[in-house]
Length: 372
Ligand SMILES: *[C@@H]1O[C@H](CO)[C@@H](O)[C@H](O)[C@H]1NC(C)=O
Ligand SMILES: *[C@@H]1O[C@H](CO)[C@@H](O)[C@H](O)[C@H]1NC(C)=O
Ligand SMILES: *[C@@H]1O[C@H](CO)[C@@H](O)[C@H](O)[C@H]1NC(C)=O
Ligand SMILES: *[C@@H]1O[C@H](CO)[C@@H](O)[C@H](O)[C@H]1NC(C)=O
Ligand SMILES: *[C@@H]1O[C@H](CO)[C@@H](O)[C@H](O)[C@H]1NC(C)=O
Image (spheres, rainbow, N blue to C red):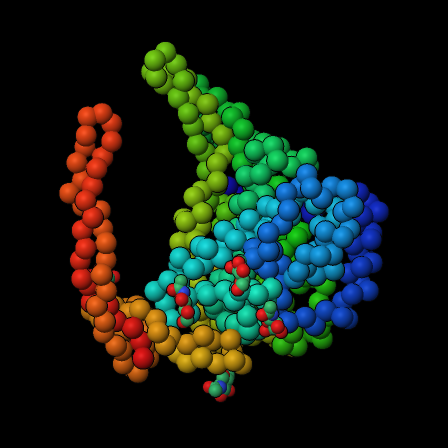
């Protein structure tokens, strides 16, 4: 699906917007927040189910950790959305950990309100990915929640029938509302960036522009990968009739796509005029679907409080791989220890009439390697 060019933003009640605007103004000077303390921390803290906090709204939103003032306002206006934002953040973090499981930086979260610890204070490629994937998680969760009728402000997708859909197929199943998900995520996720105060051309501005670009790339990945899904009807499954609707892609595919964008992310710097420009002008400028970063990554080899790197000591590595998961690269040349571990697997499975499968447990001793 093409991404619409001119979203007007969400339209909550006018007083709400005005309030939001004023709060944003008032609080912007107080907002040189560390990135570490972010709305992602919603993922770590159970958000109560909506039924439980409709009355007495304010306290709930003020108790949620990591929200910027503008996000707190949105929380009050759209309380029932918060569960899904938290769910989206969690999905994003889980996907990040999957995509980076074989790398030195493995998207480890700190069990603390400061979800990613200090790592996010550096405007690195890894930070870029994290912003994109968590914004994507929110689009995903909200779009789905609309379709499932969980939110009072949205319902099924109202996307027009695709032109290339065969004429006798019906368009009108209840689709994931990715338009709404995109718009809401833009409003909510970007809020904290829009509230920040910075001097034109400053490092802080570079970081804000970077975050906004990566948030957008994440949202667009979900939006663009949503596709038509259909179901057959007709006499005894003859499929003479089809009903179709818009459906989100599996989030794994979104993660794969964003990982590719991570690999090709563009190094940028902020100009005096307050725009991001390529560090190396021979490359193509990034499109809104691309990830960008402004700081080089630390090597994540050693534990470093300043960069928030956990280091790779104690990480499992693969002795025969030449990739990032190989012991050479993973352990940064420090060497590794070998140990034997016993793996238990199900084996010799047999089907019994009727109807269950019985397996034996087989144990196998395997060599494993961990970084020194
Ligand atoms: C965080 O740690 C505390 C105590 O160590 C534990 O009780 C809690 O379940 C943990 N939370 C998460 C989300 O892992
Ligand atoms: C969480 O991390 C912050 C900053 O690193 C620290 O100040 C705080 O004490 C930590 N909280 C807990 C519960 O560990
Ligand atoms: C931690 O990283 C910073 C920034 O890269 C570096 O200046 C510092 O020397 C490192 N500290 C340690 C103990 O390695
Ligand atoms: C990620 O790395 C950290 C430290 O390098 C380690 O403690 C943690 O277990 C790793 N997590 C996973 C899921 O491998
Ligand atoms: C280790 O890496 C090799 C080569 O890439 C691969 O074939 C093998 O499956 C890996 N082993 C494990 C345990 O992941």
